[in-house]
Image 1 (tube, one colour):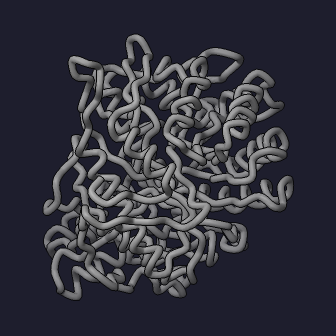
Image 2 (cartoon, rainbow, N blue to C red):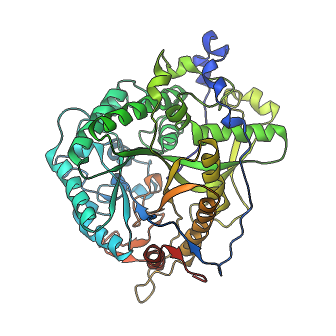
Image 3 (cartoon, helix red, strand yellow):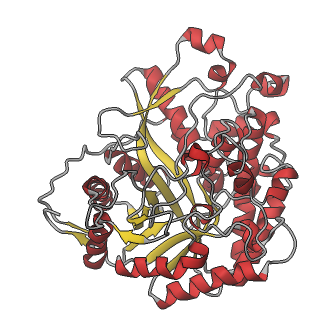
Length: 504
């Protein structure tokens, strides 16, 4: 799920602020995209009576993640992950939930593919569990683990569904965390070796890959905010982790291409349209900084070999940026994956606030969610304009790249009625409106290849446990029975027709 930097930085930056970095850094000076106000060529309206048609060969899919659905946490030679350790730590997950069983998809994957076929899907975004295929994060492949994913790939292809594989969706092998985790530069080589291993095993059948899921989210929320695994709250760990991940993105891209030269390789970035709270120049600058850290911090390095201007200066010593690193970060991604759920409202902190908090000096931005639209059960504003704005911004600023919507969705707690049916009209309305916004972006010139609803099934939603339900299919977590919701049946009609029929 998506995340953004929100000002939880700690005073640890004072330790890192040596004379060499206080003087500033020219690395960020070449990047001007963060200074631009978000593009909005048009304000959208949503007419339920209109028919919406999508391009030929458009991908209709759903998305999942290994730890959120697989379960079988000690089965088949799988090693411990940071999420196994984190979820077993008291007080970390709501209601004491964990992913030990989750949706039991390790044993029920055939049922899940049957759900996709029933929904007429032609793409499935799922992730590989690193500790399932390489238990300690190094060494040879675990045959039972890679065979599990090989069988899924074969079954998807037989069903006419594209296997759309994410290589890292947050479940780092625990052994690598104990060796330093993402703040440790040695992770670059470990990740490249893992990517090569999986590519050799599955690359003869998988053509579309994502290196990372939401690097901004797992570095910020896992190493600075502490609400996700591994639960650290260190600014230095956060800064170093972001640089290591950028280096790993470049190394992983090259490793995958070396094995599969014709593969399409991208990353799924968490994004949010960052809007200034007012028309003041100060708030516009704050929105530019927010856009840089939220949307560009892992994209600019890959495509342009530089960091955007998110901070008042780039803390290169704290991040341990070395000579040659900027070139190593480059990865000419074949597509840009966008995970988007909501917009972000940005303003400049008060002078007193900036003087009182070192983190506001480094990153002088206040960020909150919007409050004009309806809210989901997660408290997130439903604002389809954000998807349009973000897709158009990326289209404009990066010379019309190929884009995949790799996640979008909503949490509503609608359960079975007396007949067992799940009437989740709000979820239908959400996807209809966001797809309307996406269709308008395509009409206005964006090269969007597909849309992946989060999620195929209700699952373990990280720190929220099982209390938030995003699925197009309902899961009874006691019996593990799956039931397609009204939204799943609606999505099936959209996928079959490649259009949204007027009035639906």
